[in-house]
Image (cartoon, rainbow, N blue to C red; front, side, top):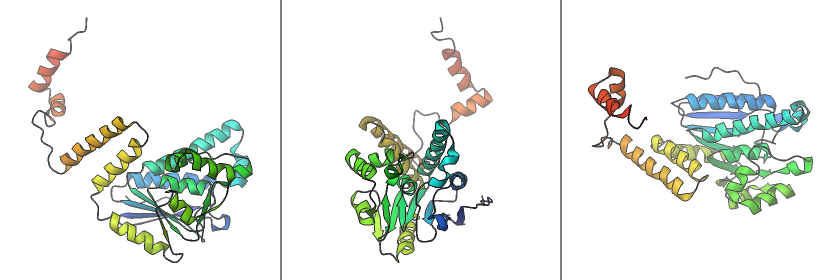
Length: 281
């Protein structure tokens, strides 16, 4: 399914199994305008609907990834209720990105600060150049992050380091992000494309049903207790066995319950006869 949308603040391209989004406001260091966020949501929805796309790469134009929210637009957000609605809109955007059943890669050069850093935290992989810089400088503008700078970050690097990053507002080296496990790999400044292409090549060799399951259970499992997370693992193991051919379970009805409902078969009638009035007094 081809994406026929026309975008102003991003560029969207597809090449078979790989989709690419270019954040394209280089004159503003790709700051997230309200229009850009709307366009990103549209692009994410298209990627989610596609069955052919397996990998999504997000890049920035003009030597920077993203300088965060466009602060010059913030007065347009309105009163406190308008600000909350706008923040929830950005949260929805980040959640859409994180929940894609494709593998997502942030290819980072230059600045990835504020909202730009929040985008990277919603991606599965981050490959960055040695010269990339990151941080959460919102504190010096007198505002607080709204869609991952405190929440996702604390889940990735812990409470103490998240306080350091947010309360001080410093800009950090790419290597520091690698040490904190915010980002995966740091490459030479002229090797970003090669680094991303190499990762894509490996990812495209995978069984993507397994990839989808792994992404889902990791994202869900980290948010719950151990035993609930292990439940996801067990069910995923069973689903893997089923899609690999071991789907016939002796005491399952192999879909006859569903077809029986449609056809009002003997199986359906027998089940409903004993169940529909049981303990109804």
